[in-house]
Image 1 (tube, rainbow, N blue to C red):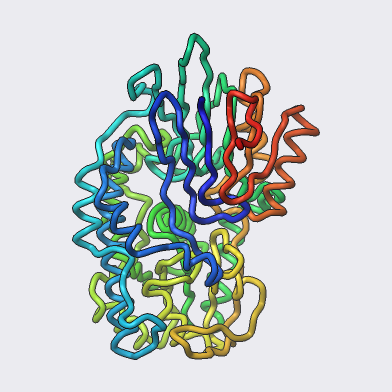
Image 2 (cartoon, rainbow, N blue to C red; image 1 turned 90 degrees about the vertical axis):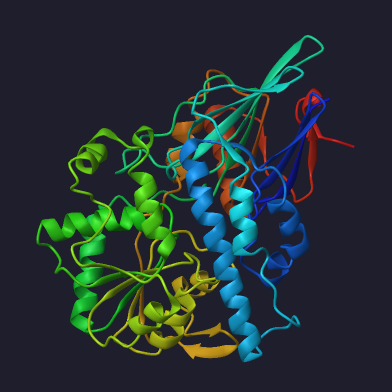
Length: 445
């Protein structure tokens, strides 16, 4: 009997974790961190996280394996850095504050991942195989199709992961789904359509206004994917003389390491971007590109009192070095903050994007006198229409579909569209729900 249990990302965006039990196997698809409200964050158990990084990570696409070797070590290092800071300042409710996992633990875990190419079936034994297909979200991103053969019956289950956009720079479009009996799909932007105004026009307007104010432009951005896409846009605007070549600080060693990873994976690029990469005319850096690797270099950025661009993680302003830049510069009316991705409810990023005039950073109430802008259409997640376009690539309606990785309204909106436009039977699972695929995907006892 095959079942799916929705452990995370059920009626929320973060914490993706789905447990598939089939053919005598128990397979965890994704293992994301919860972000947002304190109640959600408390579901991130340091002991469980350490057990997780001590396990065999399993199979991933080659680019994902390379990214893991950067991401897990860097993530662990940032958590250690923040824990030390909180302990030193005495601003922690835990005595002492602990990282979920350390840089050493992340590095060791990444070494246990193995590479599997897109389209190459993975034999998991006893009639169970898995195949990765391009999802177009960031390099290496894949949706996975499980083929199950039990007692003479066959079924295919597709887990979307994060689905990217169609017709955007750097990455090719998501692959079609094909045959599927059950689909578990993300729904981040299930209730909205991305702005049709070109991203370049929006970015040009924001940069020029920031220069006019005379202060810093701070961009909270995920180090993988969003930072590189932003660099492409800035690079193109500079080349066209539409914006000045400002000093652009990427306060994330991981982001620079990611550029090197991008250049090693031809299979992940669209043809236009790859032509520029092999010509050593990389679009992934600005003209005046500067990197802050150390804490000292990061702190020095905030001594600069002229128009600059600061790109720093985390993308939802939940942690990382961007917090220090925000605490220093949010009270300055010359500052511009540019949100370039999804901001989950309960995060500082959502507070800023919603117009809150104060935020708490390291237990300090920080006034927001900066101008906060949102760059529409920059998200690497498919919008509602693009999700429907991708889901419409099935060869026939599945027996059931489940919308996850979305706030309740977004997930519900996508489910409604699936029923109205494609005639699918779709639902939004609650946290902890388990469905029995042998009973056509209905709740298990």
